[in-house]
Image (cartoon, rainbow, N blue to C red; front, side, top):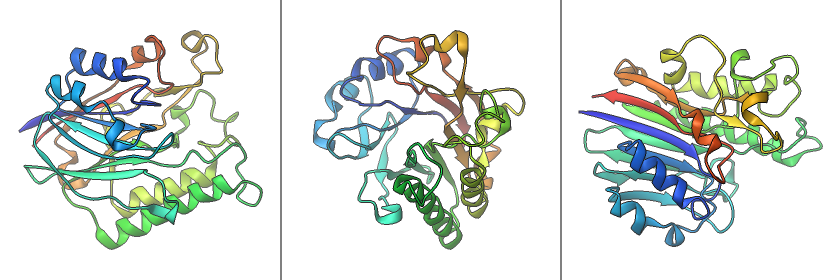
Length: 262
């Protein structure tokens, strides 16, 4: 069984329904994981997605904020969710394919503007969220699993446009990178994207504040595809659809793809 998976922070699934449909029609991934849907589950435009062949949908939502959804051409079952750091947010959902692979879709908190939990509660929540992810992976030790989503951290020096300038900027601070690394190590997760594309600058997000995002190219790789070691060697074909950042009324994130032969 071969399937292609994509992950995309859509920044409002209802507002950007046409972009989701554009992606589904043009690229046709077998599974699409969305984050920051900003919609209750019953308001997600599922009918249109089903018309395009995505009959299977597992989602968690809330009004106006957060929200995660997994759209699939392939049959899947709801595999639950966890409220990491007890924030009461819709930030995680899991689904299981018929071949036994579990897909975890995450939207890690952004962390606010100041990288100091003493003055910025949101930064503390982000670190706590990552710590609980780490502890869960330690206790559960995932197998035959894929983890995707907007993890809101660019861990490597070549995952940001300027490593030194961003060391004190939320999403690339050493403490965040350390926390993400500990969560990754706890589950022995393999960074599929970087396994496929080991060298060079790689971004999946460009700020709305940049008037010419493409020319300035001040990006960060915040969106990730990981896999457990038992299936990571089956992954290939990783790519980032940079052009989606230039679509009409775009998200500030773009889709990240990987194919698995299992």
